[in-house]
Length: 68
Image (tube, rainbow, N blue to C red; front, side, top):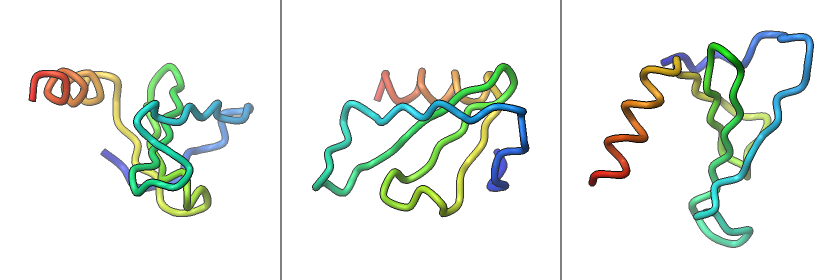
């Protein structure tokens, strides 16, 4: 996991807002992926810190979240 902003990939990241997020609720998460990294940010603080995970770590997290 990294908290560094994404490197310049030569293109803009395509952010997708979580279907569980609402415009007025506390859970506002967006995810964008590249071939080597999954980026996560708070949609209410888009210029703030971002998390970055490798595909294997992201898959492990999603698997855990689905099962708990």
